Image (cartoon, rainbow over the protein chains, first blue to last red):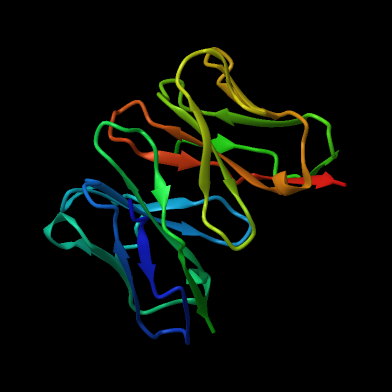
Length: 113
Length: 112
């Protein structure tokens, strides 16, 4: 089966600019996660979707971050305006119903200057 | 905030030795426990998971879970230089929402 696709792989922007990341999950995987991984740290959950509904967004900085999952398939994560501390890898992961394993995409590396 | 704690390392072991990686978690009701390996610049990949107290073996890897002590470990036998990576411990919450909480990871170096 095809893996979790993410784009872009790399993005460099200046602070206060905006950026969007896209994730296409494995077909049939109902649960989708966005994680932020800062260098030297473990992945931190930003938002969790079940189909197109939000299960948990308690750690999403809602004043600047937004995410949506249209039709319960693809998802986008947007940051506007970006801050220096947003420099990180943004990982999309999915989990299939009935299984208990996360599969990660390759990640999108953001550098904010 | 529920936490998963790991020693950041680096943990250095000689080739052929046993590497022992440890993880503690704060939520006594955590359901499932995972070990992921992450090579530098790559995304995490699952090594193994464990749900019940005791040991679970898969090739050179053994996961050990002690729910009473809120402790999970990963043993890597016959360590190889290719095992050099960061090992992430993850747990799911009691709520059944499949929220995965990750530790900061332990960096392992296997010396040839």
